[in-house]
Image (cartoon, rainbow, N blue to C red):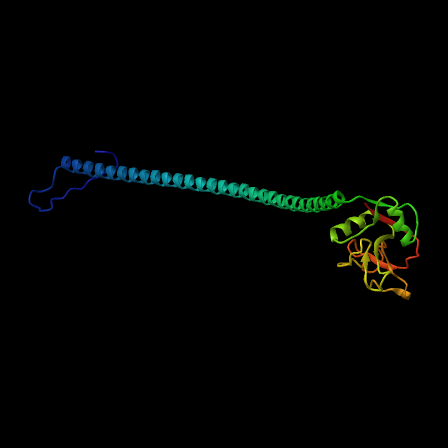
Length: 244
């Protein structure tokens, strides 16, 4: 019997008398063993619970870490995506600017080519030259005729634009109403059908403006390469444009 441990045995039925000391000791040992097994089971159970709890904590930590990494990766992806979008927007803006520049250049080129085409069409049919002397309208016409030409005849807008580009001063052209006031005729005796007049012209100021000039005065009201004719006194001396 272990020191300090006492076991008391009783005969429950009171039939056989007191149990022997040996049997009491056996029962004490059995109870002690059962208590030890319970303690072991409790310890093992507690250990298992701790292990399961640790596994759960580790799993949660792994999950949280994975989610954190996923969120970080997502943020980086979104950031790169936004950079790509911004870059594409900048490229699109640059392309649109370049497109407008090309369109403007193309329009300018078309205008230049059209002008050259018109000038070529006009000059391929005729030869033009400007006199170097100041003469009245009649003497200017004679100047041209002495050189196998005549004062220029202008019957189209294309030709008007071209003739306007040849001069930077006021010059005589081959149009007048000297025979009958208001009845404009060209030097080939054809009647004027379309005129390219300045604003409020012809006005026959003083009743003595019967010959027509091409006026280069850009400050004149209503002046343009298409609208530059003015009736003037035929005795006025100026240069002329001849057409051969």
